[in-house]
Image 1 (tube, rainbow, N blue to C red):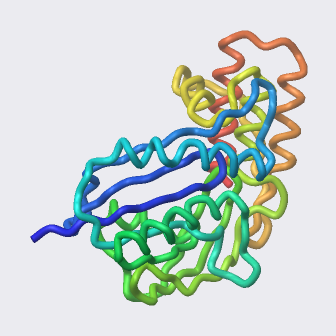
Image 2 (tube, rainbow, N blue to C red; image 1 turned 90 degrees about the vertical axis):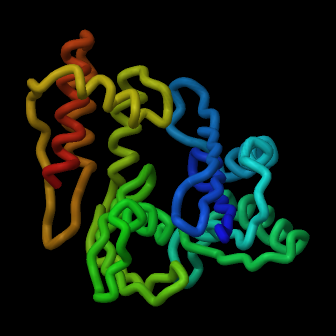
Length: 246
């Protein structure tokens, strides 16, 4: 007999929920990107909390009505002391309330663990031996030493990553400077796919730590001159290539 599990995540810039079955297949999902005014590069945490609170009930109502056997929710950014972000409190509160009313167990994950588990779900394996994971998202660039402890929990340590600007911040700053909506990732990617030609941007890595501040400054200098569509595609591809090289 199949079992069904509800997952909730209220992180930076996306409200998400989904139901998976005991065969690890997604049977329903809904998400909404938080609204950011044109030209701005982010939101205050209070605004994130408001938008998550407004969006989550409607998104959950879009999921199929199935007997839920358990709930998983992102409660904090990383599984380390003092890891806290107000936006996650919205999803955590819903998860705790639904868990109580439905009398089903609640598992609280770190957002970082969820990124790693999502990748491992595609690989259809969770290594029993320690492994390295690259956690790259809107506000994160981390090389993580992981040892799986069971039940979705990792013993993890950050051993590399970015010392200044994060990969997602780099992409968003360039995208917004070119007049693209925030978050700018998918819009910048669309431009990058329009060409194979580009003028390279630098990549800086020292002893496992990346610096994106320099490449971002170099990209900004190119934007300071008026750009046509061909130049925007060229620069977009150069940005993603510099991140990949790093």
